[in-house]
Image (cartoon, rainbow, N blue to C red; front, side, top):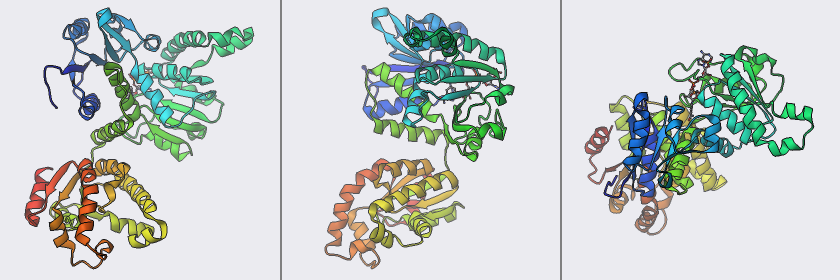
Length: 475
Ligand code: NAP
């Protein structure tokens, strides 16, 4: 990352901050958009919070994220606050306002979750929503449910008093939000309308009678490493759940999510909430729109950080040595070996040539994507040799990175030609001018291989030992 006199600082204040994933998001966007800003975490004690915010302003810092335990207290140090953040009572993003000589506070956690559910096609309009938990995150969820016009919001918490307090303030907010509707209602209807949020003790969950619930799991139960824990276990509850969103994203498939899917519902974790709260903050700081392809790349980076995989993925053109290197590498490192083409043939029950001939290339690429998703979710300690066209689809390139560290085995066109010219099984080489075809295809594929790879490994020497050593050096 280039740092010069024009580079602006953005960052995070909280305590602790050591495990934050935000640098992956913000520095990742800056690098990809060639934006001159750098994101750094700052550990700030509660006693020094006001000075930290003031100092940040004096240091010309463009913007800050705020995390635990400062999300509420920081409000005292702001010159302005966004309406939603004010109602939620928590700020996680500070945006520099030179005209006011300070920062304006926003709650992009709420906006991030909202963007996630919209992207996942979840509509809350006129639905009954259940929120499990009444901590800081739950309050943002309640506000989002109001924005999205949920019909009724049950707020369930172990400590009922906390649910009562949130319901009281948020029901007032609901009344304000829907004041235009309220004006047209009869008195008894008004009572129903402004009682949208219903606080309950967690133990009373069986009193919810509605079906087709949309449930947000906003407690800290089930967070890694306590992955077997869940806040509610009763099958009778899960039978009513149509959609479950767990605000926890580690593990990727929480016990809560498993129970939702086991009973026929759809389940989501909230890694995208984390992604989008960051993207929205970045957009506010830089006054730009982050393009969707960059957002998808950042999402892949986040998944790789949160769910690291120990697999090795070899990509490259035919004749680059993926299978030879892969088999030997797996043997030496005591890992398993999978050739994705062979795996696909086994799954499909026919050869790749037949899949191409009978179903077309697009069907084959779809199959590749399906197989990659399965492999990502199930396989570890494995070396993969992939088909030469695997990274051509952007989605596949992202999936390969989620599966493991990706090595592109490179070789000059002439070297590749020499290696494969006597191979009678390759259809590509059967026509006229195979060398010309290799050159043509390589021109198209090389940038895609490079974009999909973490590491480039030169195989021109034809020396297996050297290639294996180069890969092992990077592990
Ligand atoms: P918080 O303010 O500490 O609240 C914790 C909640 O969990 C409270 O409702 C608490 O109930 C409940 N809880 C804790 N232990 C419990 C137990 N043994 N049984 C029943 N309930 C229990 O935390 P938060 O900031 O709201 O965060 C909640 C979750 O959301 C965390 O797991 C956090 O990682 C996640 N989160 C995710 C994102 C994202 O970007 N995806 C963003 C923010 C938060 P009591 O009130 O009774 O103690």
